[in-house]
Length: 148
Image (cartoon, rainbow, N blue to C red; front, side, top):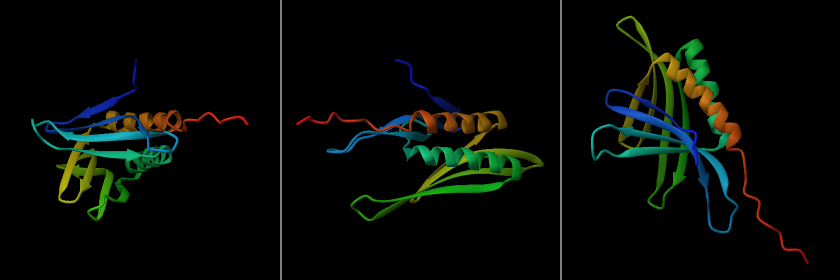
């Protein structure tokens, strides 16, 4: 089975884009888009950002805006994990260092954060890949209805 997947590797970190599913007992499964951030050091934690298809499309739009206008754009997820509210921020940004423009994806959850710089080609390909996944992951598993 072939699974669409795209990974950006930087010097010490990376981010992987792939399809995912949301499944809850008693509810129909739904398509999602997964962004998995990781460090290349062994034993390091990874941070996952599971986006609804429309959020993946919105992230694609923000990547294109950052590429053309500069700056930083952020998507925020808040959820109650039983131990209080957990806030995850996923950002895309254009930065300038030593006269050179650069692009990056970053994720922050609590005290932990992972930053993944990306060349322009990979940054823009990630936008196109997210656009693709936003459409292909827009599905809900249809359960069979009992006929009476």
